[in-house]
Image (cartoon, rainbow, N blue to C red; front, side, top):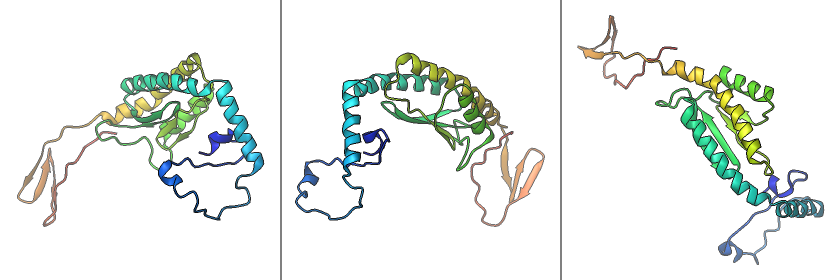
Length: 208
């Protein structure tokens, strides 16, 4: 546990362990840094936990998490660019793809035209979330209500029309008959000489 323990006001980390590891609690590892168990960080953690309890944020996260998962599933079914998502309560990430068969991503270790456009659209509509590579985060505040959640996904729904256009162009494929004749790869009016011992793999011809 880290940021959520103090709501990021101060740095603090904690480790929760089961009864098996607790058997080693008499064997202390004398290591660490000067900020370990800092009283100010611990005070921030106690105040944060008190807000969690008094405002019912944990129960709200459970309830809103179910709605978030429902909206994310509907979004994935509706949009061709909607890939897999990993969501637990109100913490999640959604990937965007160009082709559901090949699962080619909208960006790889960087950005792309459609992902940059999606990020701009989110900000223009007042939705601020983390957009990186071919993913965006679904991590709303724990105090979010159902109306706000649905408003956010309405923006996402409109935004994914941007990535859907790129996905639709990648789905357009040519069906090509390919044969091998005496060491030549032949398709349509074209042919390529194969090297000795060259293996043939499955090839996807795509119109971009």
